[in-house]
Image 1: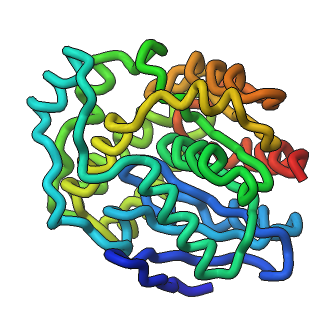
Image 2 (image 1 turned 120 degrees about the vertical axis):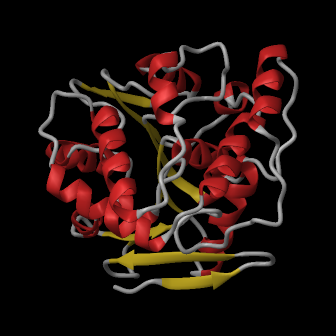
Image 3 (image 1 turned 60 degrees about the horizontal axis):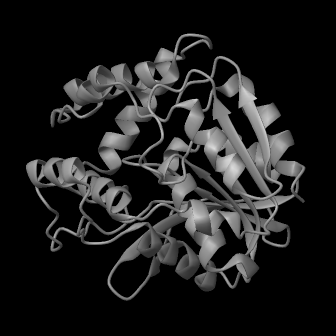
Length: 292
C-alpha cells in the first residue's frame, strides 16, 4: 500500500487502495476537513478481507490533494448574512464538483461502477454520485450525513462555536486542539482512544494544514441545493447509518435521508456520536455487506 496520485484537469487527487483489484470496488469518501487517513487502515483492511477492493482518497483542498488557493471563497460574514436571508450562496465549487472528482478517480482506475461509502460531507458527495450517475453506483452508504434540507435540526450553537475555532499552526497546539475536538465529536458512550487519536492528528497535521481549503469545502456544502427530491428518485441499494448521540449532524438528518431514499435501510447505533468507533466497525461492515 502506497500513496498514489491521479492528475485531473486542474488538480491532483491522492489515493490509496487495499485488497485485490479483482474484487468488487468500494470507494470511501471522508468528510469536511478530514483526510483519507481518517479512514483507519484497519477498517479498510477489514473491508478488504470481506472481498472488496477498497479505495480511499483525499478530497480536493485537503490532505495531499491539490489546494485550490487560486479560488476565492466568500467571507464568513458574507456567508452568515447569506444564510440569514436564505439567498443562494456562490462558492468556488460545490458538492457536485467534488462528486466529479470521485468519478474521475474511478475512471483513472478503470472502474465502471462501485460501492460508495461516505461519512458526513462524504455522505453528501456519495449521494450526489448516486443521483448524477446511478448506473455507476452499485450501492450507496450514507453515514452520519444529511440531505441538504436546511429546515432539519442543526448542531447547537454552543457546539458550533467550538468547532469553528481556527486551528493553531504549531504542531503540539494543533494536536491538542484537534484531539479535544475529536473527543467532543466522539460523544461519551464508547471508549475514546486518546493515544491513537493523538497519533492520527500528528500524522494529519504533517500531511496537510490548509484552513482555507476547509472553508472552501464548507462553502461547497452551503452552496449545494437540497437533495431530497432527487434522492426520492433513486433506485440504488442504499444504507443509512447514524448515531443517536451525534452532536454535529443530529439523528433527525439521518432519519430524513433514509426516508428520502426509496427502500433505504436505516441503522441507528446507540451511543455513537460523529466518529466511527472501533467497537462498531464489525457491525458497520456487516451492514455494508448486505448491499451486495
